[in-house]
Image 1 (cartoon, helix red, strand yellow):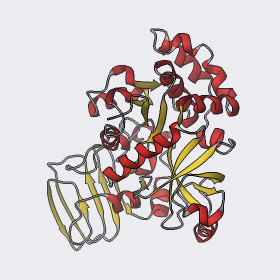
Image 2 (cartoon, one colour; image 1 turned 180 degrees about the horizontal axis):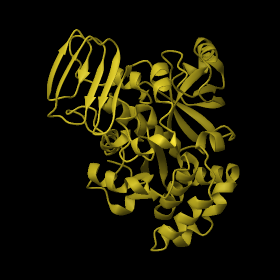
Image 3 (cartoon, helix red, strand yellow; image 1 turned 45 degrees about the vertical axis):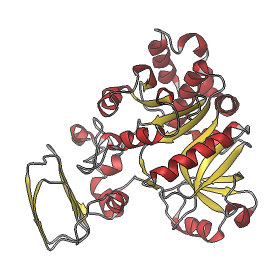
Length: 365
């Protein structure tokens, strides 16, 4: 039986610019199936949460402009469980908004805040782990982060060092956090992995709603103060105007920097499922299913591929014939208004697309 005090909040407001032009401002990566056989990341995350908490206890917080995208992907979700943010202000304001919303519904709630831009293919293991972590969080006054043991030195991830060193990290039980480090240089990441004292930060954290409120009000009062009067506004017809005002005045701040790096109540809950943050083309390629014998993935319904290896080929028109020869480790992305052809390696892609932020290309973002 699912616990009525357990809630999941899916954070689905990001843009995903490192997967441009497949991920765009009007339809970012979390709402896009990357192959015909797969759901979008927000749909997959929602279905995973259905195994952990009652359906009415799953909330999605996203930008106002993506509210309809959420309803397209998850038409069965109650409208009051979609929390629209007027503008993106990173994860601290959305955590506060979600926490106050759930506290008003259930003061005894335990909340799991979950990003949706990741791949977790071991669904059963993830869901059983999340349930156990929520039970653990319900028994202690702590902010619990799901920690993944690093398989390599990766500069795209945050790292969390635990108290007690290597022995504590390998104990497979919850342990207190010592330090947070966000996306270190490669040499530092290599040292972290060698030390055996660090986890990757999955971006998934859990706590009693009351504890989350206490820590947010203690460490990010510049945000929580803006929510003064939330008890009288959230869940009422005045909520939209109230939230508009809050977000117009709110700074942009991550929950990691604002709270997690400062609190003395942060703990790691070690996990054993495979987790990947989908934040660049190489990661997406490594995790997409349905590659051919030469390691190519192509979502076209009609294709002629010859002498290609290790390439990722996406088209927005499944009826288009795609004919490509002689590519090795390339990305080809064909949309209605953009054609991208580039080596798959992140440095080459970032160099090529660095100008997209200029005003001349605004309509293509």
